[in-house]
Image (cartoon, rainbow, N blue to C red; front, side, top):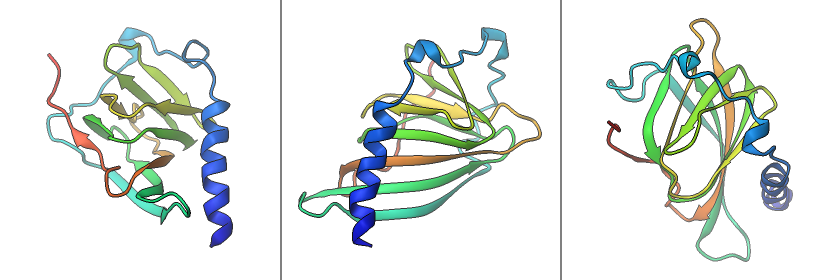
Length: 153
């Protein structure tokens, strides 16, 4: 287990440093957003914890890795994370939309770093295929859970 403590932060750092610039990621056309209805909240989303561990030698900090799966047309309504988060798509295609920025379409193999406190939403635009991605979070212990935001106008 000790090897995980060294490996996971190094993997997160590598994913964060190797991310393409936002302009290099695929931006869907405005008509291609096809955003599902978010009024019913989070449905069709499952999370499997792969790792949740204190970071040795760094008091009050933890690393969390989630394996997250979205059913076709699933959406996570506007929210933010108190800690920075890196998303890495394993399967399918997803759209991430941060407040004030153009939407980004991520496909298998793509990653996206979202700074702490950034309000965003993400969804699976497919009507037939699932979306699966990993979430890497390093932050203050017990403060990594997402916080909802009201719908924007």
